[in-house]
Amino acid sequence: MALDTETLNLLLDAVRRFVTDRLVPAEDALAHSGEIPDDIVAEMRDLGLFGLSIAPEYGGLGLTMEEEVRVVFELGQTSPAFRSLAGTNIGIGSQSIVLAGTDEQRSHYLPKLASGELIGSFALTEPDAGSDAISLRTTAVRDGDYYILNGTKRFITNAPIAGLFSVMARTAPERKASSISCFLVDAGTPGVTLGKPDKKMGQAGALTCDVIFDNCRVPASTLLGGEEGNGFRTAMRVLDKGRLHISALCVGIAERLIRDAVQYATQRKQFGQPISEFQLIQAMIADSQAELYAARCMVLDAARKRDRGENTTLEAACCKLYVTEMVGRVADRAVQIHGGAGYISEYAVERFYRDVRLFRIFEGTSQIQQLVIARETIKAYS
Picture 1 (cartoon, rainbow, N blue to C red):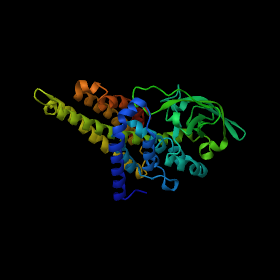
Picture 2 (picture 1 turned 180 degrees about the vertical axis):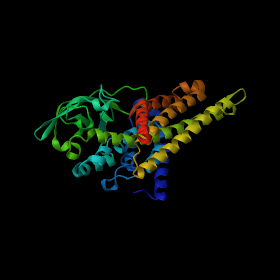
Picture 3 (picture 1 turned 60 degrees about the vertical axis):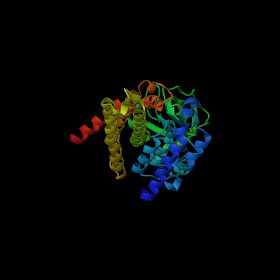
Picture 4 (picture 1 turned 30 degrees about the vertical axis):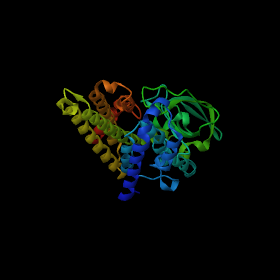
């Protein structure tokens, strides 16, 4: 159920102040340490940021998709690592349970995910199965009242700190969606080991690593929904929602980048005047603002359609393709407006330039979005 306007505005104001007063001042330290301070994590929990999309009956805020993207617009105005910590609980780390879990699985895990007591992680990608997710090789073999999992997952967000893994594994050999199931595996289960944290181009503090399952024996009760064969379809539904969430994040980052670029351009002087008075600088600002406006409208429109119960596979893919490419262009222009200063780590645009490159890759590359858009468009007009 949607929040009333006053309550939503209070939430947005609280998140906006938190971003401005607490997160932005902590960005530089995070970039160097790769760690989010415990007191900030505690404040994120108090604000309810880990449970935005989880129903109130399980301790979450139960936001609609439109309300969620509006909150994420605000979270995007700072380092994406802060959002990433809560992002898996909001999206891919919890939504498989929301969509397909048993009552017992929901009651056991969702309150802990909503409070941030437990960090969820979505283990789908593998060394040889990224965009071609249906070819994953991790296996789950039934053994009485247990399953035995074997395989390696790669680039798994929040894996180094996760308490729960939603693991996609093959329960049948055929190359089809019904061959893949999902298992809810607690961290620390014998047979689960973690690789070293990945050293990435950007997004310091957003932790990823390999997750290895070596004869990992889990009870049959860990099978999502108590049913084999629903893993792949659930994963695709989860990713539809996640693509809107990531698109909203990129809208927020683009707004931050434009604001930083304009502030710099009005202060930096060349030829005796602020560079903001030069038409070629104004052209870059104008292009960025126009693209940001288009992106924001796209995301809000798709979110409203999802809230109405419409299928938004096409719209989510359109958003993910356009908005993640858009924020890359905005980041490039922001660096260009800063000139040499934009290449120096003292300025946030240098960090954001590296950070935003990831958004065109994860949760479905731009090329995969193109395929989805083409497929859904051909289906609609055939």
